[in-house]
Length: 288
Image 1 (cartoon, one colour):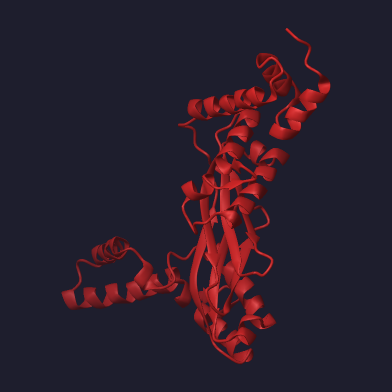
Image 2 (cartoon, rainbow, N blue to C red):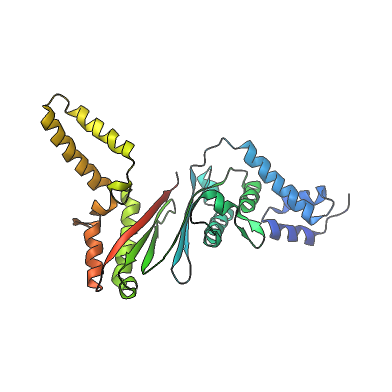
């Protein structure tokens, strides 16, 4: 077997981000052909993914990134099996790349879309394969979404300090002055943090699955089934109103000031900036 030059091993390491010994072994198996060695390392990662396909990926990181003009932003999660790997530099680097790939991705949602996106000729699925080859753990994209403004407004993102949970929301504004106001930026960040903490099911009750609504009604009705029918109806109606208040973002009490709803604090902020604003949509992702 021909001696593998150290410089070639170092070159493969830079290309693949794999360990020196893994790179050397791959080059030896490929008789010094660096492209063949890369293929060997990739196959190793694919084999590991296949072997650990049934494993749960309950750890990971939530990442975000915005375009320089702030009109496009991405929120995504990269998941793995253990917190040890999630805290490694290699995993953190791949998670950062996920946000970069998300901005490039032509689609606004769907994990398969970002996996198939290529940057400098490399798909993100290849980035994962190489990472798995190094860590030995199943790794996958948990969630991915990209928001793009189509009018006056702003995109607010909040990722908790532990990078296990984060939120992205789009706010529409009545004019550019309101959209760029510091007051709206501040309240947008606060509402993103509010969503992260309160886990609303939807923007308003029209966004809640009808099956969930019927299930809640059934539970409440069963709790007072021995009361007269007209009383049951009123009690269920009252409990459902409270359910919507607790689970619909626009109706929720604002965490920083529970004397107002989220809708009211947003309206106040927009009014102080000289216009109006509404929340168009949001996503909340977490791992674990």
